[in-house]
Amino acid sequence: MEIGSWSTAGSWSTAEVEPRRRFEYWNDLVAKAVCGVNAAQPSRLDFDATISTRRLHDAAFTSFHSPAHEIDRTSRDISRDRSDAYLLSLQLGGIARLRQGGRETVLKPGELGMVDARRPFSVTLSGDVHRIVAILPRRMVHRYAPMWRDLSALRIGETEPSVDLLREYVVRLADPAYAVDGAVAEVLGENLCALLGVVVGHHVGGLADAHPQRDLHLEALLAYIRRNCSDPDLSPSAAAAYLRVSVRTVHKLMERTERRFGEWLLDERLHRCVRMLQDPTQVRRKISDIAWTCGFNDLSPFNNVFRSRLDTTPSDLRRGAPQARIRPV
Image 1: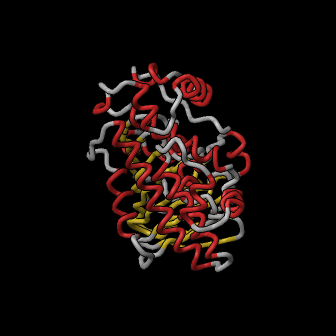
Image 2 (image 1 turned 120 degrees about the vertical axis):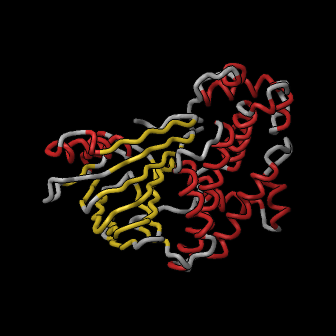
Image 3 (image 1 turned 60 degrees about the vertical axis):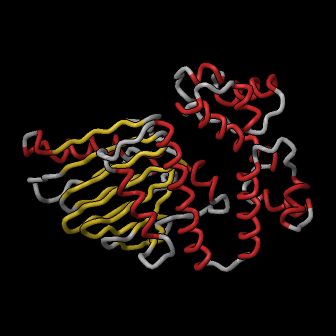
């Protein structure tokens, strides 16, 4: 059950198997749904639980109803399942105690928390457990918050700005009854990560006041690139003039993303092209017109970089070829 493209969903219940096999069945379901995690056998044998999963492009959502139990993701699990993602959980019932990297936090109903799937963690669940876990690829999250490096056992309280919108997004996108097509699914996933960037960015900023102005400058720079990536003449000097900083400052800010200005800009243009090529409303537009709209002013280099970074051609992608991840420069 890997994160894939387009929208798929499924639901399962331990009531489908005999009582003595229910927890084994549950452990297998949870491992497949959430990055190969393991569930520890509770003392009770009548383990009645349900799980539903949904994939929307690169994001995945899993909803649980279960009795109290524990789950963990060990170094061994990580070596077998190398999911490069953050897990954003919304607690709807019961209590969750997250532990990762020497940190521990408790989630009550209505609160959200995050762990990093690339590092070991454990979760102790108590009470009548109801929660949703969103599996968000690191590259998507870092597009909107590239300065984040340690989100271990992070709690997002109910008083954070816009947390109600974030909560609504998670609940809505996890609901299989909320029908969306492929193009809309991708946009909603991007919007969720952008909103997460706002909410957690404020939270992290409140925890650590180191270089707050620099963080604001970086966010302003990246927002400027996203807004203007269709301009073929977009350059570090244009961004510097807009932000009223030096070109050297622009390059120093980009160092925090571990990407150069041109690399970030190229990714934004490619992401926009992919969305337009898969958008049914754009089917009559020429590929050359889409390339131009996205900031590419020469079709031959566009085709070359598109194929090298996505392992497919613009024409094949439009015809429904599976979309590969955009390869790093």
